[in-house]
Image 1 (cartoon, rainbow, N blue to C red):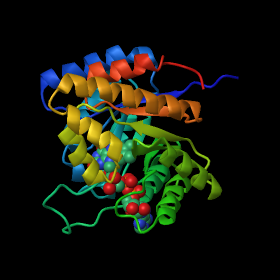
Image 2 (spheres, rainbow, N blue to C red):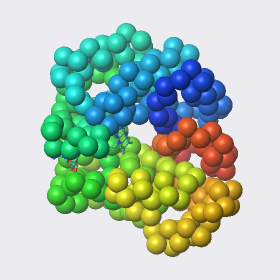
Image 3 (tube, rainbow, N blue to C red):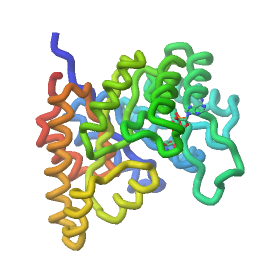
Length: 281
Ligand code: FAD
C-alpha cells in the first residue's frame, strides 16, 4: 500500500487582523498540498502565548488542522493543563511540544522545562488525545553534551509518548541520513521529518543559523553572500538549492517534509510545486 509523504507548514504568530487574514489566505492556498497540519510557533519563553493561541484556534475553527507549538515558558503545570484543555475543546489534536528558549535578556533567571517532561505531562493528563511532535537536531542541539546524549534525549521524548520528531533545518542531507542511522541504532524508529528552511535573506539566515546551531555549508554561504545584493537572484538560487535538498531527502527515504514557511507564500508554493506535492512515498 502506498503511504503519503507527510507534509506540514509552520507559521509564526501574528498580531494584527491583516496578519491573521494573510495566514488564512496562505493556508487556503497551501491546502492543495494536502498537509497533515499547519503549525503555529510559540515565542521564546511563551512570549507569544496569546497570539499563538488565537491564531491556532482561528485556523482550527476555519477547518485547517492546526498544531500549536507549546513550551512551559513561565507557565506552571496547571497553566499548561488549562491551555491544553482549551485546545482539546476546540478540536485541536496536534501539538509541537518543546522546551523552548528564554527570550534574550532573561538568560539564567529561570530554568527551562525539558520537552520530555512536557510530553509526559500531556500524556498523563490527556492520554492519547493529542498527536505530539517534538524537535530533533541532525546537527545536534547547540547545548548538547554530545551527539549521543542528544540522541538519548530525543529517545526520551519519544518514550514519554511523542509520535514523531521534526528536525531543525539543515542544508546537508548527509547530516540527516547519518542521524537517522544513528537513531535507528539506539532503537528510535518513529518518523523523523526533516524541517525545511527556505532561503530568502542572506543576513537573516546567517544570524538565525548562528543562534540555533544550523550549519550553512561554506560553498552555500559564499554563493548566497555573492547574491545578497540582488534579492531576486538570491531567492531563485535558494529555491533551486532547497528543491534539490528536498528531492534528495525524499529519494533517500525521508518520511515527509515540514516547511518553515516564514509566512512567505510565494517561496513555499514554488518549492511544493517543484516537488510535485502531494505525493506518495
Ligand atoms: P529539549 O528536548 O528539552 O532539549 C534541549 C537540550 O537539553 C538538548 O541539548 C538536549 O540534548 C538536552 N536535554 C533534553 N532533555 C533533557 C533532560 N530531561 N535533561 C537534561 N538534558 C536534556 N523554539 C521556540 O521558542 N518556539 C517555537 O515555536 C519553536 N519551534 C520549533 C520547532 C521545531 C520543529 C524545532 C526543531 C525547534 C523549534 N524551536 C522553537 C526551537 C527549540 O525551542 C530550541 O531548539 C530549544 O533550545 C530546545 O527545545 P527542545 O524542545 O528541543 O528541548
